[in-house]
Image 1 (cartoon, rainbow, N blue to C red):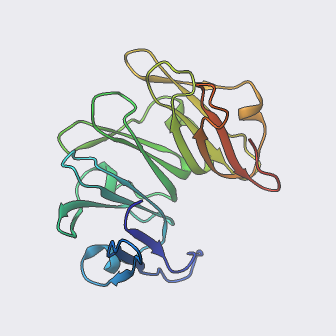
Image 2 (tube, rainbow, N blue to C red):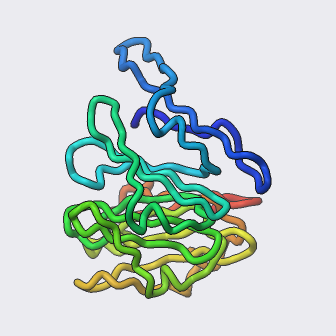
Length: 230
């Protein structure tokens, strides 16, 4: 697991934003210790931060960081320069599409060797395709973008074993969860509308794929209130 970033308090509408808290694992073999980091952009960029995701989007061998913010604030992308140094990226769709963002999930959905990004929102969700040159292009058509739900968590996984990543999105406010199947060489998505996986729930917060029965097919856990779903 990566060195840790966390928000010190849950952001409520109308309350001032809080600064994130960053801890560095000193990597001691028998007694790991964490040191709070106070310098640099990451711990000093105040925002209504909800979630974060690590991913090496520029394929330089170290994990970069994406942070989602709520309340119409722009999200944050920090490029890892190595040596514990991060540069905040301020240009491009990925950091200027202000929305009510809840979570983010990296995944190479188009199988071109670089990470793309899904961002869940209260409203239209965002899917960004990485063009390989450090630029992210908002995919503003298709069911993933068109479904204006109250989305929280999301998880990529190849549930149909066809070699590309499909997407599950957990929704709240009494809405059905969404499963999008990644189809054909153009990597368009089809929304699955039948079955328990999309008709159960209604107050879901997150999801995770995993083959718990070792049969070669991904199973799914959904964090849901009042009962979790497997």
